[in-house]
Image (cartoon, rainbow, N blue to C red; front, side, top):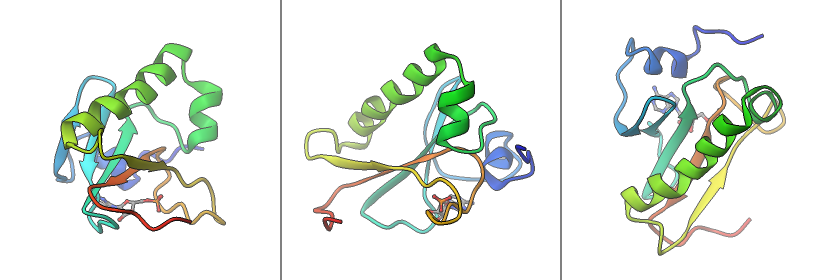
Length: 115
Ligand code: AMP
């Protein structure tokens, strides 16, 4: 069950401040507060989805495409499209998902360690 008191829901509603890197009516990208790379954005759909499985199972196909298409747009805006970037998402406990509002991490701006 989605908990609309999670921190990203509060950021989307404007109740908590974040550094917004990109925003449209469906998607918002914010600066990660504890960056793991020179560029570390968090991209979230504004709709209420707990994780990637909830999103791909329950969002409209158009919404899903719009979301994933926005990643390249945001990477271009952040100046990392040409140099390359990593997209990852955590789902659930073993992946250490800490915020239960679906988001993807977009990391780049430097050579990232392989994993
Ligand atoms: P995850 O562990 O995949 O759920 O990622 C949650 C991410 O949110 C972590 O990388 C945190 O550093 C980041 N984070 C937590 N609180 C905030 C906040 N208020 N503003 C920006 N990023 C945050």
